[in-house]
Length: 456
Ligand code: ADP
Ligand code: MG
Image 1 (tube, protein in one colour):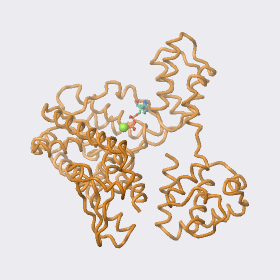
Image 2 (tube, rainbow, N blue to C red):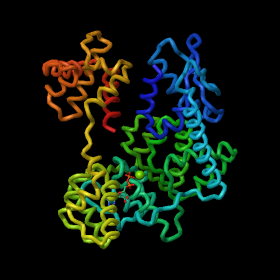
Image 3 (cartoon, helix red, strand yellow):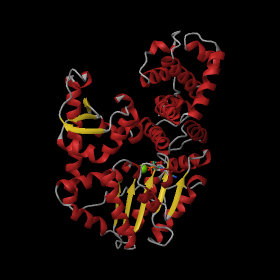
Image 4 (tube, rainbow, N blue to C red):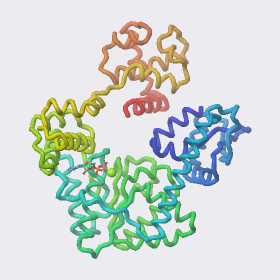
């Protein structure tokens, strides 16, 4: 049960957050309708309780309906009951993570006391260096508009959203740089994560009033990657009040996230409603044309001649995210400068060998089998065994279904990997899982979760 809850939490909150806060939990005893969870320090216990307490109870109750309460305690799990927590290595890794969190809080606290609320703006991220194309022209126009006339009706808040590496942070910094150039407007830019650490630091040093005042004294507040606040109810609440106070006072808010306000389902409704009240602009995935324009502009700025063939090759190969595209080009340029050799297609394939390989990477059937077996707690060998018990047959069918969806293997090839089964068996499995997913939402969620974990 616990490992299932863990993988669900991990998918909900993301890897970093999961490792920072939730991975430290070890399970204690069950007593009637109550289960005890242990955390290594008081601070972590309090934090997990306020930020994730309700979610943990709900997940436990969904897994094991007899459990109605989750009690969080400071302490270690009984090493016999939880062998995973017994090893020395596990212990020191936990301690290292606790120390890392404490360090970030301390850092936020010292920033607070220095009164420099805003993270510095990156001078490279300006409107001039932002390449505009179909996928981002609307977001760009909105950002420009806010930079020219902040707090105009209809543009407050400005909510920018889109996938990773598509230019949200770049646009926010561009707005900030433009506005601070005159020196009259005070701008505070920070990630939602930083916002949270500062908030915790303020609570710990009993200076929440100062924190609130500082935040509420800026003309423009920009919070990046708001999705980080999903499930952090207290920080969300604080942000909500700050948000209202600023908008009511005619100040500008700019927020970014990976999804639209209506799709950020872990945020409180009233916050989502307010976030959607101004201008909502999405940045779409890049097109081939835009990737070429971005590469051309960055190559030109570098002063190194990069043949069109090479740019096209890169734009074809690296499609997901501008940051990676940029990284690949930078490496080529560095290489050319270092060795004084011209950039050619052959040299590109050689220099970027590892990056290109990573982009070719497809999930394998073996990985799918492993993850699915882990998820339902069955043996990996049962993926190929002849056992027909529902408890193993159903996960096996899901693995076949995912193999069909996520790989380019044919039905007979998939069948062979599952103990030499016939292609009609695979076909049947795909149909069965599809049908079940339509009927059973909990099952559908499980399958989707697995898919996401495998794709990431
Ligand atoms: P996000 O915040 O959406 O994850 P970033 O703003 O950090 O993405 O962008 C990732 C990198 O790609 C940055 O170095 C940024 O300058 C660059 N980038 C993204 N979009 C563009 C664009 N349209 N023109 C120029 N550079 C871009
Ligand atoms: Mg960003």
